[in-house]
Image (cartoon, rainbow, N blue to C red; front, side, top):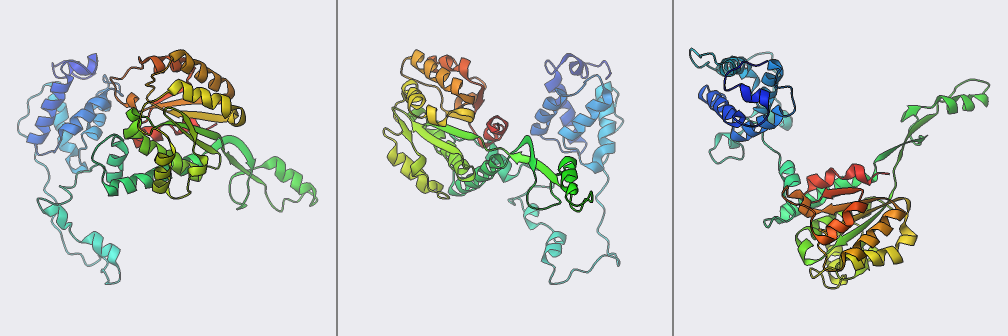
Length: 399
């Protein structure tokens, strides 16, 4: 157990009380000793302490060293600071970090040739890192542009053309992952004879035809899941900020998956299967906006889902069908109509998934009449406010 000083006791009580100030003081101690630790790192450290046994001194030290991103050359100094701070001991003097090794000429280093641009580029100093306004500051790890884009909210106002193009590529990659997801079923392997897992039973059956000699082994692999996905996208005014990105995801999935249906609704239901142009997302979005009446207007959620249940559910329903509703659940109609439609859809499909962009806000509660009426019949109620939330959805779209 870590020592009983006031700085260490919050680790034993939980992530409340004096833990945040204690970690802030510890971060200040690290910075005063020449070890860089940002406020973001301190927040990560608080989150890391929620996942470990805070009575284990070594586990706490290792978790904080990882969360605070302590470089390897400063581990010894960090261990000394940790022991002194969390046990209440006095530091004689701040530890000094070892100076960086001076570059030395070695005869055994390989000579860079003019035709080796990759190695030459790796050996040259990064000029951007040396400039005050460069693209990188120091050598500390930072979030990649893709990671930042995955967390950027769909309703953010500042989306550049480059970010939109990058988002289309990420959505297409995500759709491909879903379209090639493997199931738990094993089927005979096709293609390369070395792929998959060895199938002894089929191998012995083949050997019967050759007098017991196994000339070629049979193999098996996991089947590719091909569920029928049906998307019902709300294009009302309250969904206007999210509808474009959600439709981009569905269109990318429609291109990768053969069995994906797309419907849009606000005041009425529209089948958009014929308006999808393979590989041309922006052109398809323009066609959809022109085809759907009252785009970005009001919504009649209950009547639209009831229309889908009566017109299309007998054809599309089944044990391998997964219906995904993309809506914030704000409805002007009768909640009883919505509840009856959702109950009817759930009875004819394998799974009903409801994606609500408002769920990305931790303060949101499904207290609206329409959302509260539909919630008892929903198998998965998940957010859809950024790409990261859509990635977490993938297991729910597999049969």
